[in-house]
Length: 418
Image 1 (tube, one colour):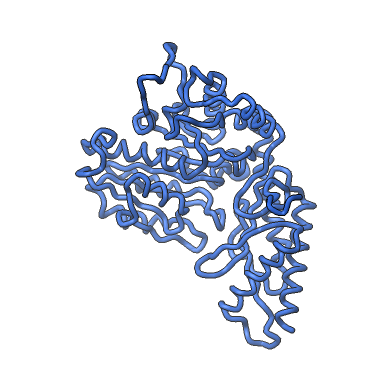
Image 2 (cartoon, helix red, strand yellow):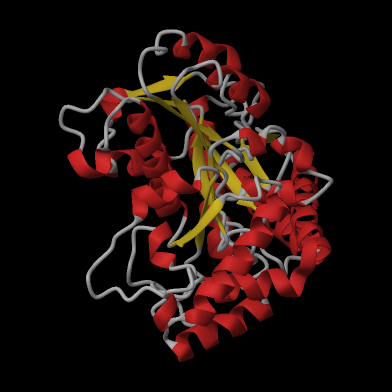
């Protein structure tokens, strides 16, 4: 292939959390380009609007969320979180007697934002764009797997009862795959008089679609808003983010644009621009509709279960290799691996030596070419991050990739020892 093009849609691409493209979704994406509809208004893209509406109903049902929730389609989780948090900002300020869409933030009641210490960076980006900067964000301690500590959250919220509050929880830590304890978080948030709970589930939300993993998302339906990516684990082409909001009125109020030349229908049909920030937008509902229609409930669950099983298989295949440590509990599709060098004696390698060796193994695997994966830093230590989220990855792909990683690690260890 072209050296300038990454095979990120392939079955042995484990870098970041990037899905492939299901055949039905890819075909629908081609049609989307051929039709070239601007999906902002029903009147210029009726089929796009209906596809979004139908797919949205399916998604709400699959995730087990309140049936009357509203749905919007965005470029990805960043803009989806922006949309959800804008809805939350609207509602908590309205309860405090302030119309943020009319009057802006100057002079508005002081919103407190609470996030876990391991919240994804896109949450902070979304908050910044909404005028809720870093100095008003309270970070709550997380445990060793990156889960927000419910006791620490309660301690933080105890001092915020008199303020509008937005709490951001996480379903699926980007490094470990871990889930915040939502039942305890929900209970703590609901004790406040004016609070909104958002759940960032960029890939972890899909665990709610399978009986085998649904326990990880206990309490999910009791939040106020949710975001996920379809271009991750639903395996539709880029770009495709989803925002779901319990309070449809707040969602609509935060996003409604309106212009004299926007021709609305008399029948109350859904205008997609009312639910996201973009008025000019791709018809992202078609690939999502096609993916869900082709997979069905059982097919979607099987795909999520299979990817998670393959992540465990890869972790098990690496665990007994010399110098290897698996850093996380493999509860979903994420595996963190650390590689210690052999120093030729009884003295253990230092953290700095292990960091350098881990990064060298990652570079060697990337250069070898059997598979591609990336690196991360977890609690101050370098690690290889394996993310399994492609519909076409097989046990043979996982095993070949494990063998390649082990070969590269052994070769690098031998070189270091020599």
